[in-house]
Image 1 (tube, one colour):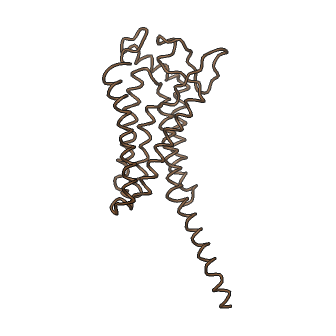
Image 2: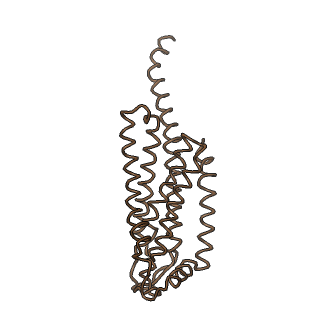
Image 3: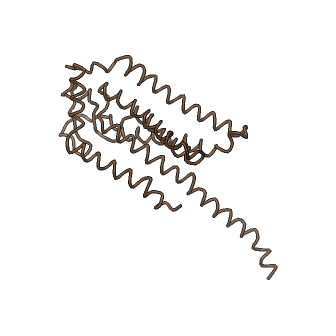
Length: 251
């Protein structure tokens, strides 16, 4: 499979759909509208009432973070087992891909936080904070303080597991959609909790999903198609180089 044929269905169409959604949300100022609705629905005045709630904070944020770490540890253990257990060995490449994909998604979002200027809802003046809200595509006013809330970090830990779609696609295509559903549902649970706490706007979480899907797609092609083709080419070159003297002698 060529990269362009792969990208057409797995990257181009999803990213065009994502771009259309982001355009509509930016054009309608939906981030602030939705955040305002959630804030007043909670009865917020100077702070977000659900920011420290046991469900949103203790369960979906703190325990959710630990759950993602536990999943990653389980993958690492499975990779280690693949070197000693013949049952796990056939899945080694998929497990390594899964770990790399999850790690890449989380790191890319972390890097994004350090280079963008968007604020968290709880830091915005309209919701009791002291900072100005600004779109990702707009410049902050002169002297305004930079935020570090974009993309959604906690949400990325859930959406990163959309990479399970590609793992199952390689080994169990019949259940691949369940791997995708798991990553999306986990990310949605984290995202909704963070939006209820005032930690993130809607677009913050959508960008995390886009980053997770894009990075996992690119890594999947590299692991299961790009590297495979390169290794075949290398072995072919080795074979011909080893047999070249024999061919010359036969002449």
